[in-house]
Image (cartoon, rainbow, N blue to C red):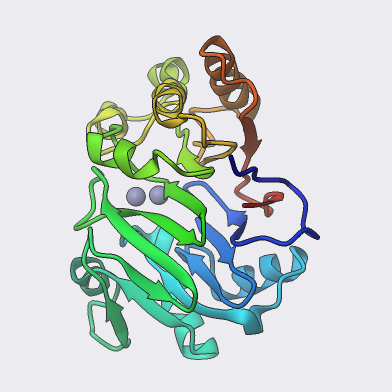
Length: 268
Ligand SMILES: [Zn+2]
Ligand SMILES: [Zn+2]
């Protein structure tokens, strides 16, 4: 069994730091010993560099940005980061078209469901149910290390479960608490959108999905994309930890992510 540890000095195949998470911007840093990439670039270019700096990460190591879908909280910084630092852009064609309507950027196009590699990191984009053109999650592999990322999904589909099974580390959305969403002053249509099959996962749905995919490989989970108005970090962590403990999975570390600062590091 492989263990993902929150230490930065040991050797690792893959190392992760969530630079930002939530509707104000999403950006995840993943590196192997030789290659670094970003998953999404939903912060401004300036903020992205500041966060990298604060996390003690060297931007010169970065090679590429893989974009999950076109929503601005995942793509705001893409054009500027690409132009300023030359980081290559990866997306499927519908997402690339939606992010770059004028066709000014140069893209490496992938197909949802078809693996590709950036340096020594193998990447499999897989389809997620969300209200975007062709949204994807990612499974990243190097050696035996396997990391899954799914940050915007309305329901935990069979395909998503299948892809996240066997990962040692997962970044999974825990967007809202059902009760807080229900009692929030948000317009009814927006509540319906969030709850829909194309919307976002609740804390409970994330917890149930984690129990289902854990197997004996899952060691560490980052809870991502928490709603500011309809969730609470303590509540999300408690809900997921309790659910895992009830299923005999209390060895799994459940870690927070933040909209305004980077997470801790995890590696496997
Ligand atoms: Zn989205
Ligand atoms: Zn989002």
